[in-house]
Image (cartoon, rainbow, N blue to C red; front, side, top):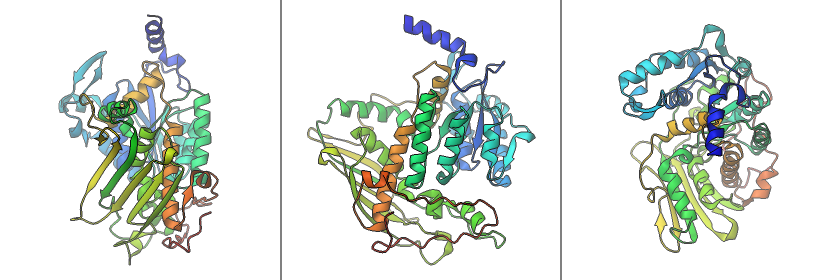
Length: 435
């Protein structure tokens, strides 16, 4: 009863007791979005669908057309159909939301005045300084360490998309800011939505409690298609703008598929194992991404053999092949008493995990649920993925100590739309050097 009373008190006084949150007289939390592409737009909708008394108050992007397009979609309620029938808390009660309910509930909470439309490479700082309580980091991942560091220094709660860096220097920068966020008791929730997915949560708990015996081997596939490409380069775009418009093709800003997308499987296996790998040997290359500047300098397939403490091996395979090729996103955990796909031991289904992670975020901030800070965990999983990529690029075995001490820093040293920035060539094992 003492714990219940404490939580009730925290909930009732949230506006003045939340670390990093301002005392809003209307009781609302205000979020600012940094990165207005498809994922950022969807993250805002997930946040507002899952929580009442939260509104979007500021937006930032390096491109004005992206910001204004995102804002228009949010105000018009585009994309709400996927939430039709979701059951969430409204007015202290659980309510099943119809499309009519969602249209009345969400677009009115898009409260972004013209003075809070920020464009440019410093726009993220303007969002942070705009009086928001929550900063949502949804840009391409190359910028994540810089943006996260600034948000935490300013005492903001953060929703950060995954991964959190594209190189070891940036990942360690994020880790330092994550430690500071813990000291400040700030909430940090990541876009690794499996941690908010009931089927995964219950299955991992049962695996850890011995449901399939001792783990002996692990496998993952992320066999997908290309995420996106710009159709063609506008002749007015300098290298820097081109690489931002077509960001999934350049390693400095996207990290390659193993970091940007296959992260989900790798993060999941780290969760199951309760540890990061100690060593990896990987290989990869290109089968079809060649002969056009559209494809940049990332691989289109990669296979990694990770080794965890105790000699447990994890075989991971990711690729992005064209339409018509096999698609498979799956995991397999092999134990001495059985196997699991990571979801099959759950007792039932929860709500959309992309929404649930934002419910966790707000409950943590308000003190009405467990405190959440996923910063270090998501950073370790990001570093694990970078470790695999660097092994594939270089052709050598890479250990955890090696990657944690690597001096590889891919971030540009200047930021300008007209900057000419020739990308490095496609990595070639034997020639590419681990730094």
